[in-house]
Length: 91
Image (cartoon, rainbow, N blue to C red; front, side, top):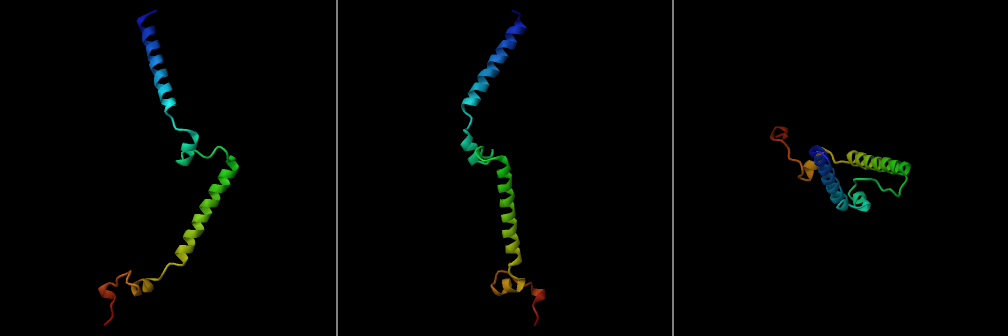
C-alpha cells in the first residue's frame, strides 16, 4: 500500500470517528421540536400548515383589533402619556 493510500484511509477513519462522536451528542427529536427547529413528526404536514395559517391569522386579527382600538392622541395627553409640544399650546 502506498503512502497516499494510507493517508486517505487515515483521513476516512478520522472523519468517521468525528461523525460518530457528533451523532452520539446530537439532541433528540423532542428537544428539536421544543426549540422549533423541526416540526412535530406526530402531526401530519397538511395539518401543520393549516395550524400555522390559523396562528398567523389569529395574530393578525389580534393586532388589527389593537390598532383599531388604540387611544387617540388627545386621550394620551389627558392621561399624561403623551406630552404636548409647546408650539401646540394655545394661550
